[in-house]
Length: 312
Image 1: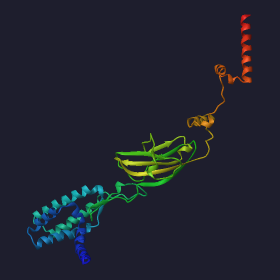
Image 2: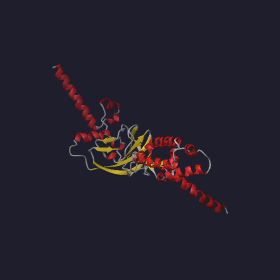
Image 3: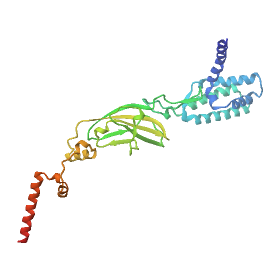
């Protein structure tokens, strides 16, 4: 029984939904009070004539039921409807006929809508593209392109020692102000779009990022986030693959310097032969090996000869 009642309610709502959609633009940009007052000025009475005026207004604007406009043009269209209401009130004040005034006003409004700035098409494959926002009169709401925030990963292959250049540029139009860029890196040769693996890249703030010279440690995924007023508009990804040996122009000194800069101590390689001083030899009798005794005898003979020469 409840199901039958629900179906019956939906069927009763169909005419109301259809009626609302036929003059949706008028509903979006005018109020009920404005429309009622307009018809009261034309017929100046309650009853059948007032209903006829309302129906005539609905019929005149049926052609604007499926209208969609550029979201930024809403204010212009609102001003146009406001001006239209004033013009119709002037016609009503001069005892004009609404049967002729409403179709004429609707035709003029169609011409006005055609002159509005067109909506830009969506540019795939990614990004929050505010310039494509559309306003739909049939529901008085707006939408933008249903595209993901993350762009596909681009592959960049660079030889070791060369330069890698990343350009954080998208195909759609960005807002003119308050645009910032944030660069991140996921190292270890990882190819990913998982933001949890990325770390900030210090010193990279513009739409261009450069690495020079490229080393195997740079192999991984670089990410650039385009933000407008701290709100992300798109995330671009670049997977950097480093190939090849050092370039021929790289000198042996450059290689040695780089190895020193990336050197880390390893205990197994830090063991060196003990080279004691004379004081250490005298302080440690066990250190006086046969070789060390011969060395001390030679030093004593040399000192004796030196003193003899000085005396002579």
